[in-house]
Length: 112
Image 1 (cartoon, rainbow, N blue to C red):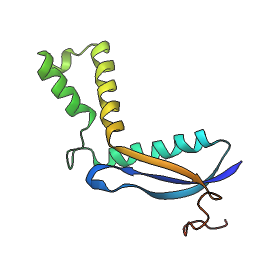
Image 2 (cartoon, rainbow, N blue to C red):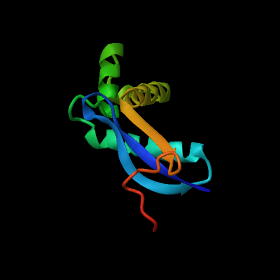
Image 3 (tube, helix red, strand yellow):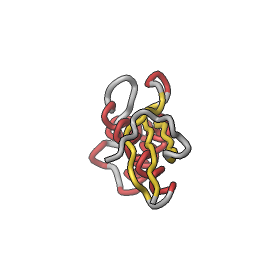
Image 4 (spheres, rainbow, N blue to C red):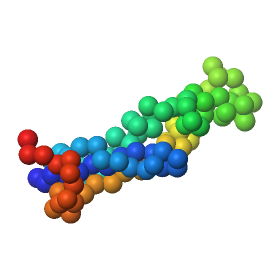
């Protein structure tokens, strides 16, 4: 197990990733997954503001482009909308991880 510094945020005018926390993880992949989730949560906190789209807005656009009423969307339509939503999320989020050894000067690391 290693301690990782997790950084997450939004790109564009939001400034990119910023430090969130330091936690223990078994693998770097686990740490990256946690940082990605933090970035997604940050995205979701801005949905509906500053050009950040929510899933319903993407669904409305999808309906308009395909001439479908919202209440007529099929499971396949919702799968496509979910894919479009995650593509939108991925285009905004920014995250990274470092071990505390790689980032020894990080001023937010404290012994618990």
